[in-house]
View: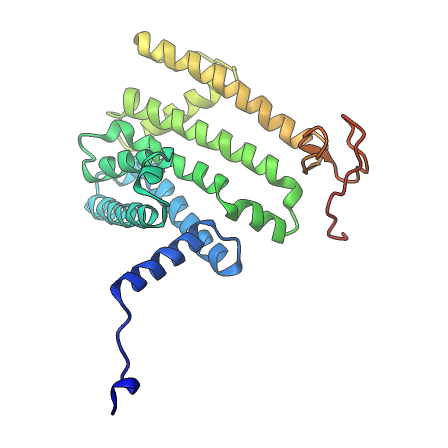
Length: 268
């Protein structure tokens, strides 16, 4: 066999470049291959959230620590993959979700010391809402017009479980089983909806401040959710004349400046 017919191994640099290219495609692309992988990772994120919600029931069992460290290993690999796919380490470090994931990883590695930050795991849902998966998935399923409503629901759920997790770990963590988590969820829902039954209250200055922030932010998100559900459907299409971003689906002219629009129509 001559030298020209020999198969030479792929250089290490080209392999690294190929891995980085595939990771970038997986994270940012909207083709079928990338969306399938994004859906897979979204399911993993939901399972991690389920593990957090069921934590009060599982904490006393031997499997809790095993699952906890398995999730930690998964998130460490995911952080490394996102760092490789990022344009630079600086860009990767400037992402809010990077630091949230690092804190979450710390809570998984040291659950007995950092349990007060475990509620940050619910931010994984927020990340799903910001990914191309939501927009493209709804569009391909024929529900693209529900994008704003679905995002409003996700934002509301993220805040609901963020506050519930904070209230649970700060005020009800020592209660047995799931009683403390249920009390925290009950208090959060009653506070967000401004029902205020008063049968469960948070003690001290921190408890009062938590109630105030929950009411102000919660009712704002609740109103935003209601607006997204009941308002007429509009498409996102910037007007080239005045820059107005949203228009009626059948609009021919911009209602702000009268400029002729050319909104793409899929023929449905």
